Length: 446
Image (tube, rainbow, N blue to C red; front, side, top):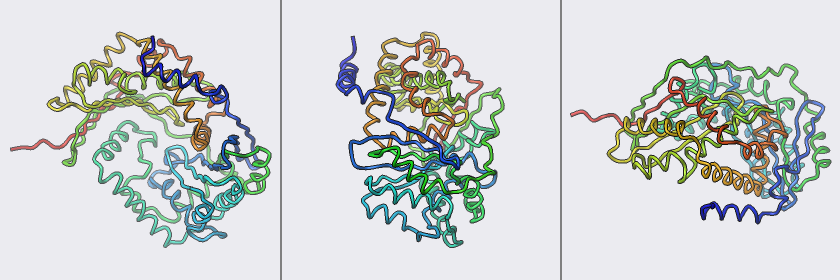
């Protein structure tokens, strides 16, 4: 019998119309003559549209010595073109009641606008313009460089948790550029130049390195007409480099990072393992790892929470996470925040005990059913947001996945068996292939 919370979730799912539960969104795709991929997602519930331009370039595509330039360029893209003054793009979007922003990750940089549907042509014209006509003065560069340095000061330098995460991540990736922070290393950010930004722009900001996603109250043929008019006339970059990155050597010894900072109020133990990403046409391993993360750390009924917080009262917080939506090998992470009076060594030992017991005892069928049902509910509710639909496809396509992969993902998750999860767990949990991190305040000496 389902538990009350699980039963309620199942009833809510059953009450959602069948069309909303379908994993096949109303998606049309095509390629422009210059190599730009276009994805159109129809959703006619409101007279609004989201336009997203995703570049297949992020911080992991930066050259050595200029870490942070991808994020730096994201900021500079709002500085104006031959046709628009600095800030004019944003002002036009706001004037029409829209919203816009941008974000940078390891594998992509994305720009988006959410506007009334009759303003789609306006934002297409503006976005296509800055794909090729960005204008940067030395003053713009120096001003924005100060902005990103201050952003790092606020988000990283002022946060011992962020500094610790940065150090642990660098220990995880000895050779791959995922070991560099997206925002950049502090010493390199201060030396970023106008030429560094322009070099990245001229290399990667081209239609044949971009995915246009248009989602909302639109008709595919209308989107195609506008895309051809504004993006289709832009020149491709014939010298676009292949996305080949240095890969990690085999890890033969456990790595440990001990980070001490007097500002630490709550010490904790983290552990990361190198893990495979979602691959096109072969997403089964990633699906098993996704479910494993939820089984171990997904809420109050999870394995780590039940064993360490409720039964043994070793921890006040636990968690597990896995992000398979990466171009290259990603990580699977677990953490334990010890309860008062529990040492970090005791917390780490308890974590190891629970993981060993899980490998020995296997998956609880009831917990597996719970996780699958919650995943299904989350995917259905996500469909209420046109923006999240656009994100789902844009993010996947910049990681080498296809529309078919995206649409197959929910069924692949539901098909995962207990044995699939255990196979993934046995392959994953090897202390010799892990990075253990300790965050704590310095010990007070008398």
